[in-house]
Length: 182
Image (cartoon, rainbow, N blue to C red; front, top):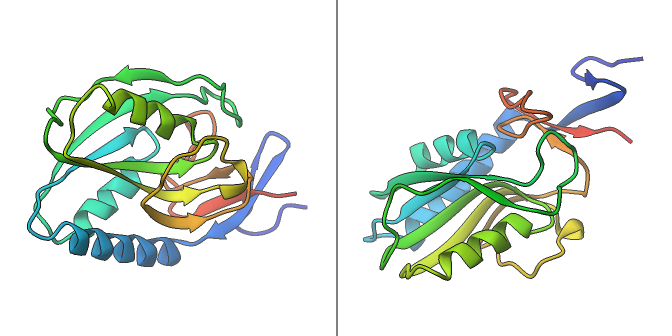
């Protein structure tokens, strides 16, 4: 029986996990920390599309420093609930990151494969610094040694939707984050 606030997708049931107020409070805390760390610096926030766009929008609105933004688009999931194990670059950056302070904005770090791909991509460039902020991190799923400098929430190794996170390109528009029920 489907309970109120649950979402059914095929045979999968998703239950509320992080509500909008909890997410917004944490985003503001991250923005405050980043603003303090980058006082007097104009970093480039680079969002990883599509998933990070809502998080990045809220984060940018909450930082108190001057900054620039850009996006690139990666794909490792397609329409599946698990990563394909391969990352493809679907959209290049429009900015020059050489000798710039870069903050990569991720929606979720699962295996760490996308962050590893980004690190390798940036090893061919010469940013002054590069840090990663991720709304969600699944520590028990991480397979690659990657450093996440700013973490919104550590979560269990379950599939989540909402607040930019999708299931087959849908459900990104949910204001809260829902987790796959056992």
